[in-house]
Amino acid sequence: MRIAGLIIAGGKSSRMGQNKALTYFKQKPLIEHVYDRIKDQVEKVFININQAGNHLKYKENIIPDQKQDYQGPLAGLDAGLQMIQTEWLQITPCDSPFLPLDLTQLLMSTSKQSTHKIIIPQTRNNIHPTLGLFHSSIADDLNLFLKNEDRGFINFINSVGFEAVSFEDEDAFVNINTLDELKKYEKNENK
Image (tube, rainbow, N blue to C red):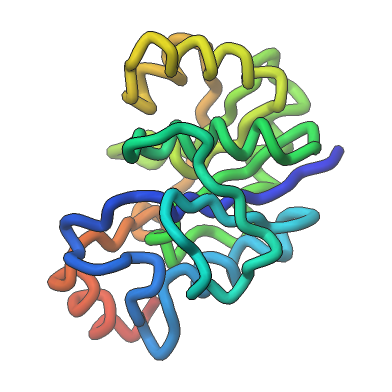
C-alpha cells in the first residue's frame, strides 16, 4: 500500500512566540527531528504550511493550506488529502520530535484488519489524532465537516469513526509548544 507522510507545520505558534517548526531543539529545527523520524516510515514526506515557507529546507515538498485564516490542523490534513495521491496519509505535527520509529507500521498493520479509515495512536492517558493514519477516501467527509465551520480534530474523527492502536510510551507523543517545554526536553538526555 502506498503511504505518504505529511508534517503539519501550519499553526500560529502563538504559545512558542516564534515559528515553532524552525525553533532549534538539540542543534536543529524541531521540524527536522520530525522529518528524520518519519522519512523511513513512508514513501515521501510532505510539509503543510499556511504561510510563506521559503525558509524551510524541503521546498519541493511543500503543500500550502487551501483554506484561509489559520483553520488549524484539519486544514492541513485537507490540503494533504487534496494534493497527495496515495491511498493512505500518515500525519504528524511539526512539534513531536520523539514520535515512534514504528508508528506508521503499527497503524498500518491495524488498518489491514479494520473497517475504519482513520487509525490513530492511543496512550494510557490520551488519543493522538494529529499523529494518525488517514485513508484518502475520507477527503469528502473532511471537506463537508470543514464547511460546517467545525475545527475540532476529535470532533472530526468521532464523526467519521476511528480505530485506536495502543502505545506504551506516552513521551513518544509529546508536543513541544512553549519555550519552557523546549528547555525541559533539551535537558532530558534520554530523548
